Image (cartoon, rainbow, N blue to C red; front, side, top):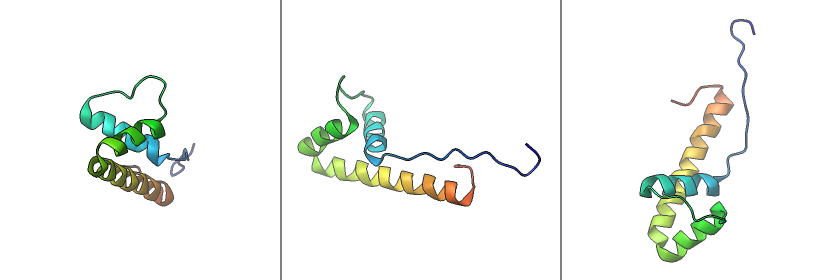
Length: 77
């Protein structure tokens, strides 16, 4: 590639998967074997609606930020 050219990888961000991974990171746990991210997050919602809401909002904001970076051609910082 010449100077000024960038290679951009565009991917779809699954907000439920992102939320599940945020929750796992915050709690130092892994989702139970065989559960999808949606199933694992349903368990969180059923156990603690407040935590579920905060994690989903965090995932939404992170996905929004990454999307903005892709659209503007900027590298996430």
